[in-house]
Amino acid sequence: MKSRPNEAGVAGSKSPSRRTVLAVAGAVPVLTGAAAVATANAATPGTPSATQAAVVVDPSAERQTIQGFGGMNHTVWISDLTAAQRDTAFGTDEGQLGFSVLRIPVHEDQANWSGEVETAVRASELGAKVIASPWNPPPEMVETFSGGQRLRYDMYGAYAQHLNDFYTFMADNGVNLYAISVQNEPDYAEDWTAWTSDEIVRFLQENAAAIDTKVIAPESFQYRKNLSDPILNDSTALANMDILGAHLYGTQVADFPYPLFEEKGGDKELWMTEVYHPNSSDSADLWPQALDVGEHVHRALVDGQFQTYIWWYIRRSYGPMREDGQISKRGANMAHFSRFVRPGHVRVDATASPQSNVYTSAFKGEGSEVVIVAVNKGTSAVSQEFTVEGSAATGVASWLTDADRNLEAQAEIGMSDGSFTGELPTQSVTTFVTALGEAAAAYQAGTASARNKVAASGSQAGVSLRNRPGGVPKSRLNAAANANSEA
Image (tube, rainbow, N blue to C red; front, side, top):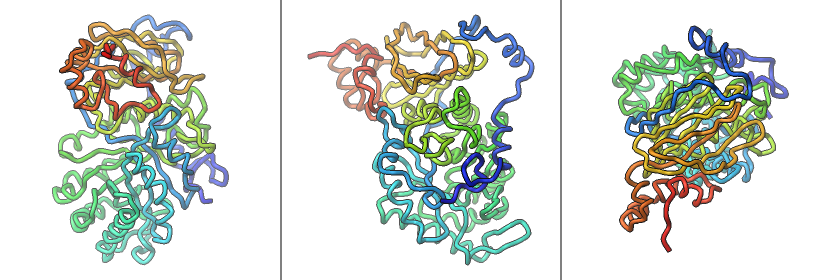
């Protein structure tokens, strides 16, 4: 079975690739000034941090709407997910990843299209969006040049039809593609088709409007803005692009923000459509290295304001699911987001780094649900103060991953006047779920009108049942708002 080109650390692959070197180069931010001093003066391992700022969550300060988290399935390069593995990937029960996006390839050979159907159908049944990216057009549409191969200029229309044919094939087999890409990594193109920014703009101008679903471009391998700036600066190309897609291999955190997209992107979506991090050579269970994934997701959502975070292969030794079908430590880090931060949640302002090596992000869900994810990469435990503005809840539910535990439910935490103290063990990631506002306060009062209100919104105590992490008893989430039930 063919492995991904230049996939390091996998049997039969080459030695570390340029992609891997770049990925590692982007894995560790350079500390300067105050940050370096803070690191040098870090507390003794195992002792609580002496100084810290409170994490203040402002649910009224809304940022991007989350579209989901997910990964890639490519049945030509590796074997398909099994039926059980599909449920592990896209289910939201205990021991499952809660992924809500599946990425599949648009094979140049139509004979391979059917291989992607079974997993895509099951992902769709479980509520996931399915997107597709091509590596190459059909052979008759390409020509070689000094830089590799490219789509022939007289074949742009035929290529758009090829993408539509794939969309139709998947629809006929029960999968409505949410979006399709023009090209995977046109600026890397080691073993696939290269595109210049001018060529992508031309295709978007002249052909993308004929595509029957949302269009993703340009999917630069390193979020290189010189590939996407021309799209944003061309009104016709921009009008025919629905999702600006990017990969984050070796991309420095300082390059995650995109001011030009904020200025001109309008209602376009911003997706991170592929990455593995920090490398493909180490086991996904290596600890505490797996915490790098938690920080990377945080950075992508907070610094980059991406609406999705999509891994490379779902099942791989370095991926969110091990080859035996069990969730890895890297996968557990992703699941702290993907199982709890569901499509439609909105990221809201929160203190992003209350102290060195601690990263926090917050999201507002349906009804009055609030989800906070806290990553503690430090070698000291932290008693972290949190304040959720406008919250009338009196309890918080939480789940923990550290060296010994994976998404383990913790005892309920008391909450008063919108504040609570969350214990962040050494080198850990914790998800907190609570509620806010009128719905929580009214439900605690046990009034009939409050019960009608939460019933109408499909939630209890302001915590959405539709978005409730599966396998978690409703009573635990109800307790997060300390609801008083009536017989």
